[in-house]
Image (cartoon, rainbow, N blue to C red; front, side, top):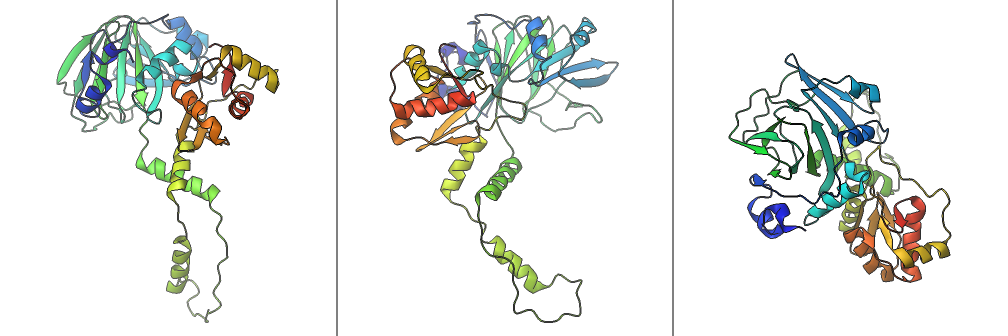
Length: 373
């Protein structure tokens, strides 16, 4: 990690003093841009089916929002001011953006979500709002004024297509220049307005609700549990109230539900699958003319491998997960696969067959590639 990314703080200092506690303004946080994602490229991404994008405008005291994919002609009709285009998961499509996202790997990948890029001409804004997750806001080109407030009363504008706070009382204000970055904890209200044409790179962190996690875990159990037996009541006696749900019936169903149990191993496996599961719009391109195993091994020996930009890989104990699936791997392959999950690439080397078989399975699904990125 480039230490300037956190304003000279170590990762430990940042996590202790600021993470989920208080905002942090970092001047000149990042300047290592091999290239900039200019507006034409961002608009090109916003025209793709496999990219989430939005266009937000504020005119005549009214908010409007459109979802992509967009036609090129839609951008040609935009005025000179007062709009913002937002493109999610740019790290899935642009390698150096993915590299920037993974500069934040002092936090686990279970928490790291995506890098969204928004572009706005002067006056462009998405209004005062707050997020339920941590976010780093990196200014790229131009200038933007940011106002923030610890007040998260949540009184939103009614009937607006986006969550905009009706009452916003700023407590602090800064103007961010190219390379400056602002960190905000969850539910810290913020209001950014472009003063010059420019972009904001938003590094967001995953924070699912308890309801979502519990619901997904129950779905997981539904697929994994295999309960035996059927309902039975040989002790049944006649009733003169057939419309009633009687207490004996309730007790039998209640007893059935007590068999819904799980182990720590179930939880660990669920976490691995859930936190690597791709979003609904994400698809992987399998190789059109796949190499055979020996050709693949030769490529790996010469050039190494790297994960696809869209891939998420995690490990826990002797289990390895990638894109919502559990890999079947031998213990001998675990050190290399853990290294791949951490670094998202493996250097050129002659790996043994246990490792190559796991890598080849992922290659065949389009989850990783042999060669240089």
